Image 1 (spheres, rainbow, N blue to C red):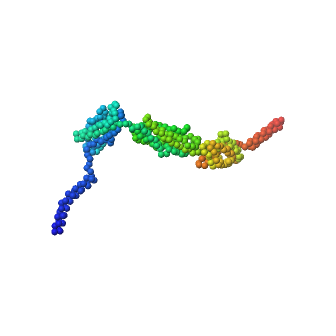
Image 2 (cartoon, rainbow, N blue to C red):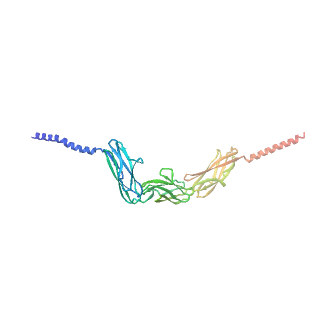
Image 3 (spheres, rainbow, N blue to C red):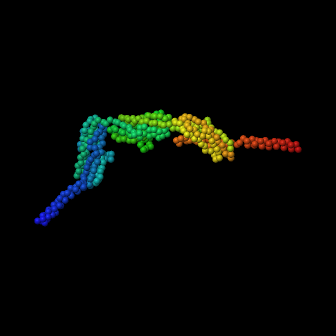
Length: 397
């Protein structure tokens, strides 16, 4: 009995398994491998769009061919809103038909020109792509409503900058065109006297006075400052402007300048020369000046002279030189004993805290000692006396 039951059950399983398995397997395969799409399709990303009253609207179209031989399709606009002119463009030119290759896409444009005095409302159109085997129709609606008001917006992440007058100051600014139309944005700035503001596109070097921005898009620009070196420390305010024919935006920014010392080395009365004698001390006065906007500190003086020369300073160090202040320093130069007459160069350098350094070159003329000049004159005089005496004594004979 058990053997007979087992045989019947096994027979039933053998008979039903292909049916059940096929059904389950077919469902799984359908999920994993959906049927391939084939045919010709006419589509657009924006079947309903808005437009401004009195302006031409343009709708982007696509014709797709999936898994079919090349298709030639006649193009038309069988339904057009009253008074409107509809034109299908391909490559910028009016076209009446298009060929689409296998598994490819071709792009078109539908240009819709409204009549004079068109009012607010919804305007319906139908685009058709037709062949012997295909008839694709695409409804398109244009909404004429209130125009989005023009609006610009300026933003920056760092509206407050700080540095010295020699710092490279740049404000990174984002310009948003929150309008319904493309715009050319003019750039300008209000800045303190002698400040110069220049605009460049972000990561670029070309100077800008205006920049085009598409509707609803934004662009980044940099506002760079050029500041005179003698600008005093303090807080400064600037305003950056963006303007179109229909809208404008302002962005206030600020700048904090900290003081910076600036040394200058010159001779007394502007003279950069002096005289000296070989082996003897000669004194030269130099003027140390701070043309910066902050006190210079820990200034040390040094000299670079020809080989064998000696130099000393009085004072050797200046603890502090206020902005706009001056300090006279005595420099003693001693040429080498073997120095011959002629012009030599000595470089006087002043170095301060914070890497501050400035120098000036002086022309030092080494002269012949007056002692040797006197000896020479004496020898010449003695020689003349000898000659005169000899002529007077032996000339009588």
